[in-house]
Each structure stands twice: as C-alpha cells, then as structure tokens.
Image (tube, rainbow, N blue to C red; front, side, top):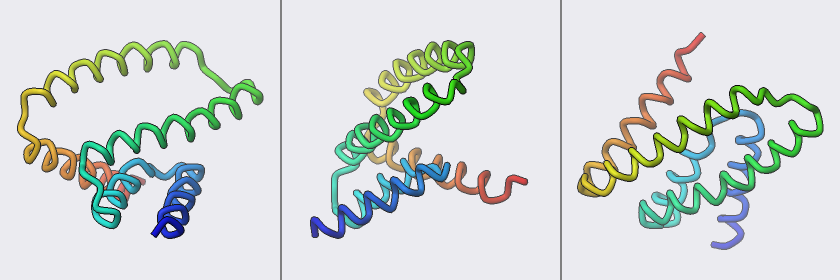
Length: 116
C-alpha cells in the first residue's frame, strides 16, 4: 500500500505543478482510498501544500515574478480567514463540516469546469 500512496502523492503533486487544485484531490484520496480520518487528511494536505508552495515560491523568487502588494493583501486576508474559519469549525459539528467541505469542492470544481 505504501507504493500506491507514493504513486498517488506523486501524481497529485504533478497535477499541482500543472496548476490543478490538487489539495481537494489529496484529501479525497486520503479519506476514500487510504481511510484516513477527515481532520488528519486535511492536516496532511496542509503539510503537502507547504512543500508544493515552497518549491513554487523558490521558482518565482529566482524568476523575480512576485507581486509584493498581492502577497501582503493575501497574507492579511488569509490570516483573518483562517482565524474566522477556526472559530466557526470549533462550533459546528463534524458532519456539517464534512458536508460543507464536499459542497465547496463540488462548487469550485463546477466553476472550474464551466469557466471559459
């Protein structure tokens, strides 16, 4: 099973490098195929994201393609959104969080599929 997990992770990383939103794919793989609990899968997805975004950051730093005003705006709004999200997640029951996450994945996938 370790080989399958490595191949799946590598494939999802390749999709991430191509610009496909692989975070959702990784969580789906972990929960459905590897039977990982939802919260653990989301934590592993964050770890996965650190490595993929770190390598992308290095690439863009060397190419000098970073818009620092956008970085500042996204950092501030990201911190505020994560604080608000953690507060909401602490109040809502897990089944509702799972349904909301699934709905968000379907909605974002549908938008990406039908976007011109």
